[in-house]
Structures are given as C-alpha cells and as structure tokens.
Amino acid sequence: MRGCLIAALFAALPAWAQVNAEQPWTRATPPGAKVGAGFMRLRNAGAADRVVGASSPVAGRVEFHVTLREGEVVRMREVQSIDVPAGGTFELKPGGAHLMLMDLKRTLNKGEKVPLTLALEKGGELKLELDVEEMGARRPAHRH
Ligand SMILES: [Cu+2]
Image (cartoon, rainbow, N blue to C red):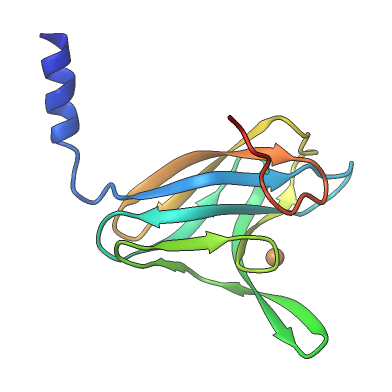
C-alpha cells in the first residue's frame, strides 16, 4: 500500500522537474580566500529552461561567469543567466562557464560537501551539493 502511495506521488510530479546537475564540484580554498568557483554538467530532459539564480550558505552571493579569450588575455565576465537547451546539456567547467562563489564566508575544505541552490526559470529550485576537490583541481575526482 505504502509503495503504491509513493509511486502515485512520483507520478504527480510536475512535468517541469527536468533539469539535473551531474557531478557538481568546487575546489578547496586557502584560508582567507574570498572567492571560489563551481562546476557541473546541467542535463535537461525536458523543454528549454534557464538558470536565473544561485545561492549558497557559504557565499555572500553566487554569480554566473563566462570566460572570454582575447588573444593572450583571458577574462571572466558575469552573465545574468545560463541557458539549458531542451533535451541537452550545458557544461560548467574550468576554463569555461562557471559559478562564482563571491564573498566566501569560510574556507572550503577538501572532502566536504557545500550546499547550493539553483533557481530555474521554469523548473523551480534545484538543490544540490558541491563536492569539494583539492585546490587547483581541473576535474572532479572519480567516485565509484
Ligand atoms: Cu569567475
């Protein structure tokens, strides 16, 4: 009976709950660091959506940044939203688009998990946890 009830609840989930974050991660920070970066692959099983906001208890605010290369110069620029195409993915990764954790309230330590909430234009809130990898990591650790 209980199983049936749970199945019914899942069946009633709105069709918009379609965007998921795969392998969300960030990097450990040195003491006193004020910024960190967040990465993940956003996968959208439904209609086109857009990430329009992000927040984390460890940061004063969270921005979306893209990386621009102008010759030898690499700079980051803030953007207001991130599009996640219908049935597609959008990758936040080192050297590319990323989340910027601004005004860090504390040190991020390797091995812990940092809560983060993404606000989707259509899909409501997506709550996730960033795995904290070692300082300078270029990719998330493999976990089996
Ligand atoms: Cu940045």
